[in-house]
Image (cartoon, rainbow, N blue to C red):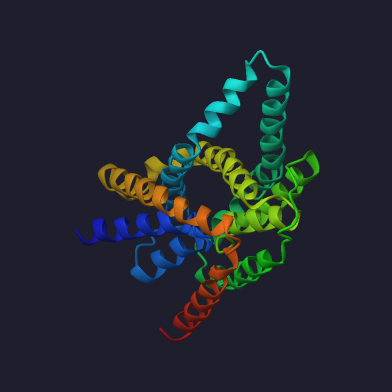
Length: 266
């Protein structure tokens, strides 16, 4: 019962922090450490991927109309609609290439970081700085996604492979600083989230069966992160559209400081 309670708490943390830009992976690593749920780095990494799959489905649900329209326009009789959809999908692929290459080449290094709460705490300081930087995006800019901006946003996403660095915070901030509209910055950030997490899940699928946790427990965790994730994403998009992403910066700073203190003295 205690293990089930802990797993649900971890799933709730995942559902909230995947979208609220405070690093879901970082919070899960710290939660696993302080609740004593850690088994080993490989098992923790597999559980982390499964929880990400819950939020993966949450993104598909929230952006289901956008996704359907993209694929619908690919077979449209309107040449302009076809071209725009093809380009947007290409930009998603282009932005996903850097994280795919780096993630595969250095998978073991990133996996090991999931067992290091001290490292995660340090990365949260960086997330705090990134979120604060989002306030410097010009509200006058009304740029759209291009091949160049897609690649730059994709390069920014690479840093989020480190637990403690917020993926959504990093990519949305990068897009805003590049002059992309707030609404599009949020949309594109979560469009490139899909191949990144989907690819990671496929690579680590065998690990899920090797975890120490039961199938029932993992199923509960998956659906918990899915439901909580839907609500959290809706909340985040409201903050992004209002240009208030930076308000999460102090929170990351406080968590980083408290975690370092706890690791040192507890």
